Image (cartoon, rainbow, N blue to C red; front, side):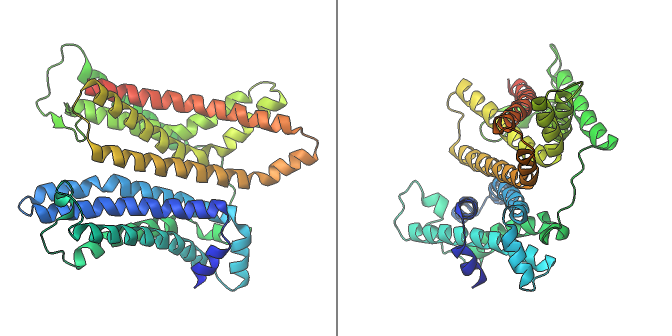
Length: 383
């Protein structure tokens, strides 16, 4: 009953977040049910069934990531809702549980809709092309789909509950976000990136002998050497972890010397937002680099494209892009007081808009460098 009353007060942003969560949960449920149908159609190959279940992990992780970022943004975007719950006697733990329950409920409804479609198609409606994916002709155990589909709301709800700190679930409980990075936080990604780059360069040097342990890549991407794959993974992880510090350093560079008001606002704003914007932007950049590299390989190698990885890539990109939008909305809400104070002091709206544009350009340059290097190394390993 609480969630029905909550839905009556939804705004466009709340409704969009809820529908996106339900849609993402429905797609992941479809992947899980397809793996179940394939396992029932081919019960002799348990290894293939395990591989198909492992293919469901990337979209499930993407949904959990989006759920965590969306839940993290709720206290900042809807402070009146949190204030009302607090006035009604709800504590920080209960508010966090209610936010997680809202996201889990959306995933449950999406999974239930997918299960309904799955059962309808199994009723001799689907053609012979979909029969192996649905497990047609084989009795469906009732516990199997329920157990699999329970993973989606449980994972999303747990991720959402873990993302909202107890201190920020209460009105006025937002903690100040530090703007700097510790030396260990910088040394670790730099070491990973340099080590991974060195490994891949060694593996791709002219005349290098094969390491004798080729790895067959999924999604029709051929095979590569162990050193090239390990080097790319280490370098990509290092660049992802280094995105936040790079954004902070770029902001400090914009405000270096005797900056104009435009450079000062843009630089200080980017430095202050680097810790919040770094993780979602880094994940989106990595996902986009991997997708573009895969498309490039498929175009250069006709007949290697696969529909399932393409659908999963669309879901992962959609979830990461939605997470970035949710984090941007959270940052905008958190900076509303600063913006109002600047306007009261006489700052021109054109100046604030220019600062946002310059900040976006600087952040885009950083992401272009990290994402481009990730894509180039991935393409070199697949060549």
